Length: 131
Image 1 (tube, one colour):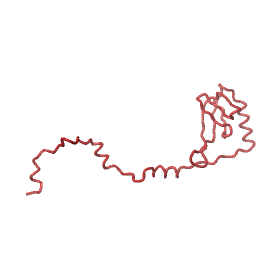
Image 2 (tube, one colour; image 1 turned 60 degrees about the horizontal axis):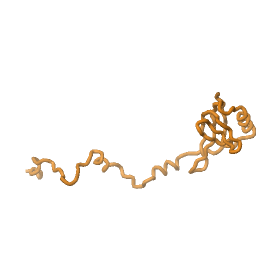
Image 3 (cartoon, helix red, strand yellow; image 1 turned 135 degrees about the horizontal axis):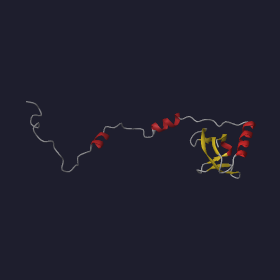
Image 4 (cartoon, helix red, strand yellow; image 1 turned 90 degrees about the horizontal axis):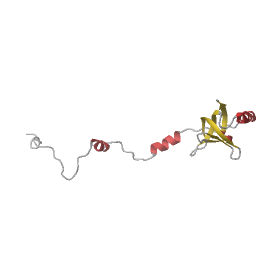
């Protein structure tokens, strides 16, 4: 005689006080436990690379100034390569932002695109006039 012979023929017990657990909740009990909350994010942040700002020489600055003079507000399509400082680490990254120039604000030193993006003229690395 087996140890469980006395319960083999019985129906599975269903609690009258505790509702049946869903398969998703049951599986969640066995999911990996993250003992160090935020550890993976901290490792990813430490591994993330940033670039140093490139210091432009006088010829490059003159080239950007010539292109700024060519831009007609509200009509000129451009792709602006500019430096975006990182908020958490030293350095940053270079982005290429396409758009149409809405306004060149000399007071603030920014180029404002029609989508509302504002780019500091001092952060510009290159301007490609596309139309």
